[in-house]
Length: 116
Length: 111
Image 1 (cartoon, rainbow over the protein chains, first blue to last red):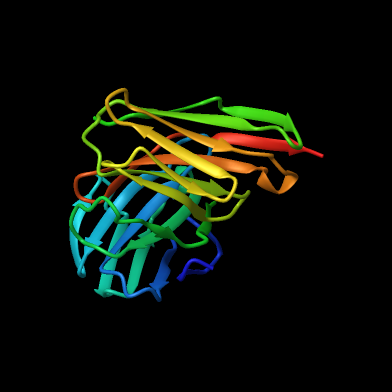
Image 2 (cartoon, rainbow over the protein chains, first blue to last red):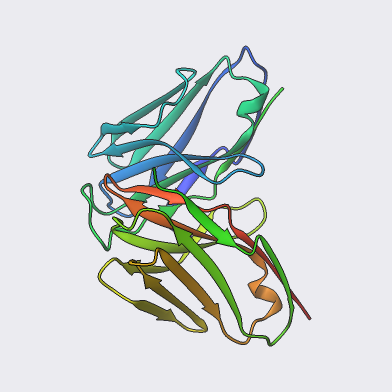
């Protein structure tokens, strides 16, 4: 257990559905992240939140909408997804918000998303 | 733009062998270099973090080194065991807490 939990662990949705992924960290960290892991591609950073404020959006399509209501919770709202969005979505957290050499990221188990 | 490359893409070794996984990165302006382990269908487990000012870190049978000037890091696994079978990922941390990942090395240790 890394102290980062994600729900649901598996999700199947149609292209017209709306769903949300949830991430919770129990580590008292100040930064949270969403990553996407597609088959045969390296992990890609999607969003970075620092103290509940989004500081990075790696050119992610608007059909992915993040929300960070507090420093312990992070959501990824999904709507009108495409089959190519099927992937493992990983959440992570780290203690510090700014650049720091010891700012280790801790990952959750991921949500396996399938878009039909 | 930072690019991280891992060699080899896959590795199969008999139990007990010592092995080295390689990671290279194109931009030396990194805060740290992290090594992770990922089991099939699972999340990432952090193995070692080497700060940019450090040369190496050790944890049990694992030793990771960092040479910023040449843009290289290695993960050394001593006396490999079947339980070490997994995908190993390296990631370079850039400004803004951004981790840039390599594609990983799939390791299989045969008993």
